[in-house]
Image (cartoon, rainbow, N blue to C red):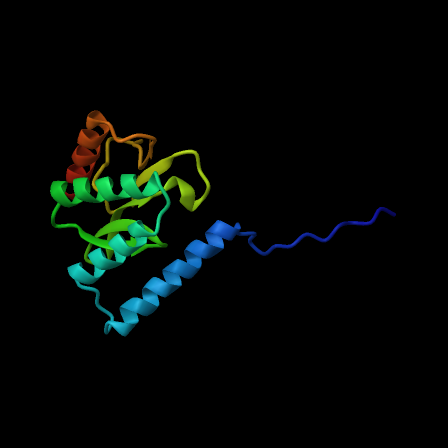
Length: 150
């Protein structure tokens, strides 16, 4: 009779995924210390601190993406989300910037959650690979963010 190998049914998260979950827990604790509310200023401070700690070229790209999103949709409130720069309306995270170094990817990602109004028929993209911030890419980011909140 052949021996069967026992396999774990526990999820196997990468080191980077576990770190992101710890960052999210820290974000929740910070919010709790603030009485359950985070002001725009608190969120922007947290976001800019996180960006400042990124290695290059992620840092420069995240700073510029922050500027673009803040100008395109000033109603979005900056925050961190799983340790990434993110932007919300109320408690709903609308979009986020995932730096390439976060999960050792070959590109950064601009992602949109389900509350973003990007619907386009039965199929539409919700995340975009970003390798360089050209004027055309910056314009497209601004257009997507404006559309997401309209």
